[in-house]
Image (cartoon, rainbow, N blue to C red; front, side, top):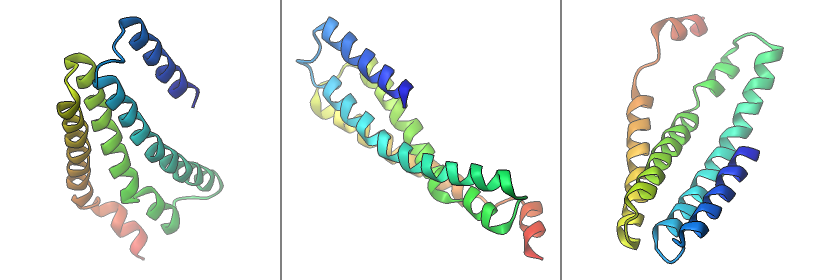
Length: 132
């Protein structure tokens, strides 16, 4: 949480120093950061449960199911793609609609890439270990 606040406020400081708040890309960037935040919060809650369960037990089917939760992969894929979209916004400094388009394309690309990764079959050894 502290790192998010440092990045957020340092970005605002630099944008003010550049007098760039009159342009569209900083506003869209803030919106994109606000899109990343809830995904990170939900993922963080799930990861805390996984961490707590992994300390007290061995790999049981319930824990394995939590670790292989598709939401974790989808959330990570979207957050990474939106992060790179934000870097593109900071570099290219486009107008409003291209900025919004970059963020939307980032979300879609992150979703598609994580869905492709999720659809891959799990390793045979993991499947066999927990079937019987």
